[in-house]
Length: 111
Length: 112
Image (tube, rainbow over all chains, first blue to last red; front, side, top):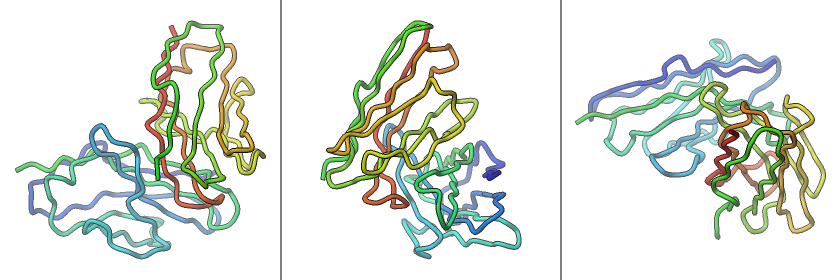
């Protein structure tokens, strides 16, 4: 069975402080990992995927297969980063668009 | 391009009734997936359709069904509604199966 764990329901940081949103996963095969974000009153949208190895809005995430983690990081938090963040997984082969989501972490950036 | 649209946005039904939700994908997208979002269980995959064929199915009872039309529009149906079916139902589309998903705003279903 595949599982995604986001241990923090709420993460509160000050503007300019570093941010790390934790994500751990359990999957028997090769996973493809994603971070999705939902800003207030907006739709769920893709932030980044590990295959792309890109930085979006200053966020990066590295897949660590040894620790089965895919933590989301940003060196300096901005007020506009306040949102709900979801980590998600699907199999690297097969599985179509069946994503397994974590329960989400609410990031609050305080001034 | 216009985003994924879902109708209706809000629904109130009573136990035992059935309901049909509709989703129009982004133009040109052939894959449509449905997810249920609840405070207790979070986001859970219901099913995926690609070129009118069900590709994947999540762990939901047979009361939950769906279909996709030749224009890629999709509907999902829930029969014999239960209180626990109250949720936000999200539709997502992608160009191909295993593509980047674009999500709709959701349909908020309340079962009384």
